[in-house]
Length: 278
Image (cartoon, rainbow, N blue to C red; front, side, top):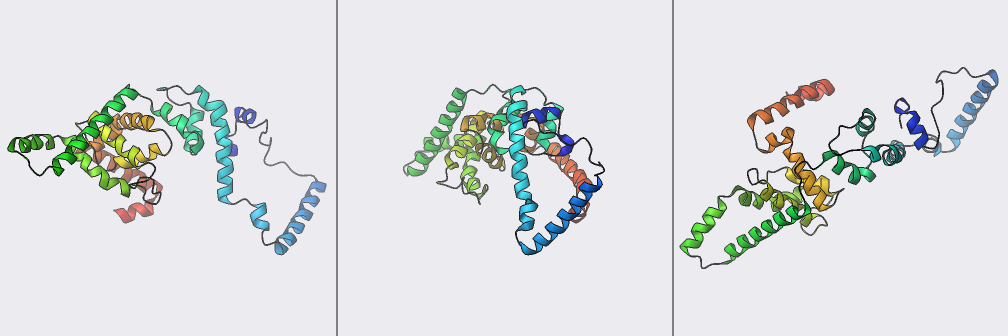
């Protein structure tokens, strides 16, 4: 935990420890001599012990793990109990959130932070999953049936005009390419079927949008931390936000606006990268 963000509340959560009163206290002569001796001793020890530096100076990964453990305690004991769905986060929550949300509490924090303004129920999720399953079976039967009448062809042509049923055909091609190193979303992977059902259900929940390439990454990240129903609720509510809805509707103004924001931020934060992109 960074000293600058350490508060009295954090001190209580972490067992009463607190930062020093001053970072510039002048040590006594005895303390100075002791410190000097310790420096000489440690210097000679470091030359004899090849593992000295790894023991005395924790690796960045170790410091990161320690920080995440400390922040997990703070979130569970003094932040999460006071979170309210739909309410803006406090400045203290924002400060900790910007330092990285510990994976151990994402299952609890994300659903509360995203909320469910669309009032999606488990029953609605099951209905849309069943609709998607029936549509998949109908499509499979239509392809398997060689003897097709003209009326059947006309009916299939009408069905194929529905955007959501056309767009779901892209999902099986996109899933294996979603975080391929994890192998969770490949066919036969532990999260493949759940991700498929969530995305198909969304196309029936919002047939005006259907499935758009790139949605697999949102659904996949959510499924890594929350159960399928909560992941579906989060996905629907996230995509309903104006900041994202215009992108997945492929509205030119929304896409151009996001592109301009990215370009400006890149020039401020990474000017060399921005120069290459331009």
